[in-house]
Length: 226
Image 1 (spheres, rainbow, N blue to C red):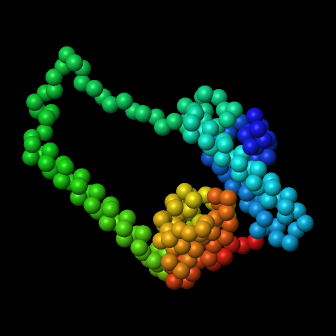
Image 2 (cartoon, helix red, strand yellow; image 1 turned 135 degrees about the vertical axis):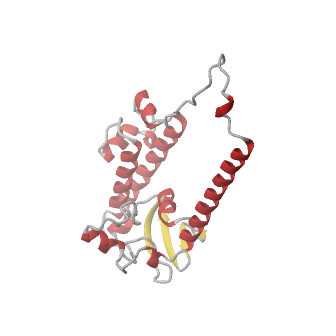
Image 3 (cartoon, rainbow, N blue to C red; image 1 turned 135 degrees about the horizontal axis):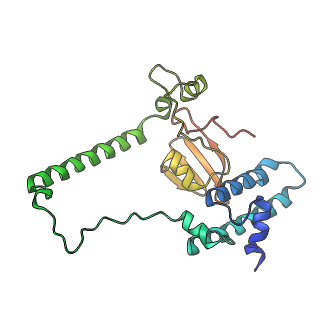
């Protein structure tokens, strides 16, 4: 086992057990990256040490995620962990071979066409709603019907507070950013642009951003707080 794949050392750094869940593993990695990133230690004598530790941690994390993709579990985890992470498959109810469907249970052809039509209409409504939501200004989406922001409603204990809404934070990975902000309008040299706003990545995680008033990102502040 090489230094880059010393998984016991990786678990020790992240203060986790080999049997931890994939979500706990990712969260611990992001916290460690945010703590050791050179941008957070600007002007410190330990800049070179922090960069070296971050590079080693990133390599070990990449090897662990590659192991998970190939084996369906994290390194050192038991086979039971793979069963937990797997998506359960619900078997379809089959008609016994010795039985035939009753004629009155088979819908007429006209009824089948009506069911298909309703499904297509529902799909079209969902698709149109998704497009409209993605183009809706972030400043308007974050306000309630009476002009209160989502943060104001949450503080006041209102039932309409969007509890599922997440905010952009340092250390997030690209797939999490897409889940919050959607696809960027442009990608170039580790920088994603959303109109006049942008997000910068290093080592595969968020290290900086700028939220423009013309197209706000889902953040608590225009720039990251040190």
